[in-house]
Length: 313
Image 1 (cartoon, helix red, strand yellow):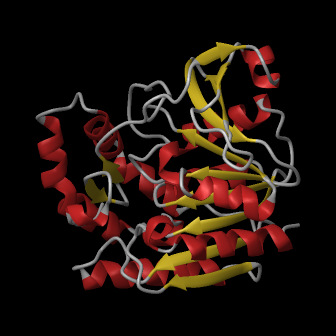
Image 2 (cartoon, rainbow, N blue to C red):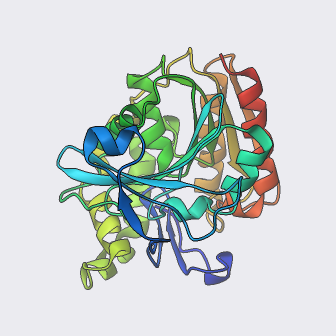
């Protein structure tokens, strides 16, 4: 939960930054193309539906797979390649479209299979009642990858709130994850009791405003995260990243807390602490960037993914 970011930070969406709680963005994904049944393993084994996008070049053609997970359907978008599987996971309130400009470049640069997906309640994925649960989100990701036939060499690229999903996913599946690029991500060292209290107090006005219109997707996500924010993040503070899984840790220069020097200092210190906890972690500062590193410094994100892909395992 961070101070509100000014609207000009986004070119196509108004943003309400509450990064530790949510980075809520207005608008939802619209379907590209026409759905059809059949096709790859996911459709055959789970009853998933697939669709081709309206634009389909060799580096940006993706296929939609609707995966059944614990009673709800989760949308996975797959751009097929070879070698590792790179999974891009957006921050709170964002869906897979957040990565639309990066996917074709990443596919062209690496030749890898690139997967983006919509967490529950976002994009084309079905909503799940109740509070935000990073462990459940990690289970959705595992189910999707399993049904898609991805059983090894996964490189996670996780922005903001997705750092929580990545932590639980890597913790439960250390042999599946060959590396990670954590992009200004929520990391366990940041969430001390003192910081949790600061974030909750700072974002209470946003939560109160969301309660007046709880039906919009962005407000629904904000409220679900706020519902159990304190216990969930106390637990996350105790979570450990597996030492066998290497990570490149990108931290923004401006942080999500531009205008709050104390919180910005703690954000930077948490990233440094996390990076120092194992010799296979590297800290990289995105100079000049806001929290929106994939938009402000896409070339840096691509470079760090390339480095991780080269050294994984």
